[in-house]
Image (spheres, helix red, strand yellow):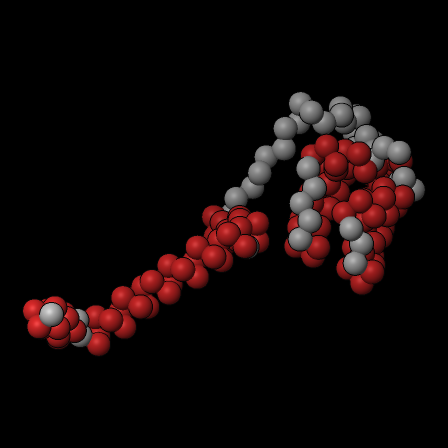
Length: 160
């Protein structure tokens, strides 16, 4: 029994307070990192993607083979009208996203509201503006609502 007490006494002398606190800090940091990644993995992924896009200027190219063919270039007056329509649609999309934030829409409700707005602009459906609107919708839903829309969901917005 006397030998056991002596070993314990030496063990406590070998471990300094500084070593103890450093070990505790490392263990606590590791613990919170693991728990944080388990509970907030999707938010962490979104954050790292947005940071890489900001730092490296990452641009995800769209697969144009999946897109509908774009019609021939319209004349200047038609282009101006299409551009005005695209700006109006962008404003309406922003309004829908603001409304979905205020009313706390789920993804399906937000998509239905967007689809109703987009239906009012059939002239944009077969133009290059549709690709740009899809990029705008994707970025805004990601940034404002923390909702990620797939390419198929973005295509579904244009057809009723």
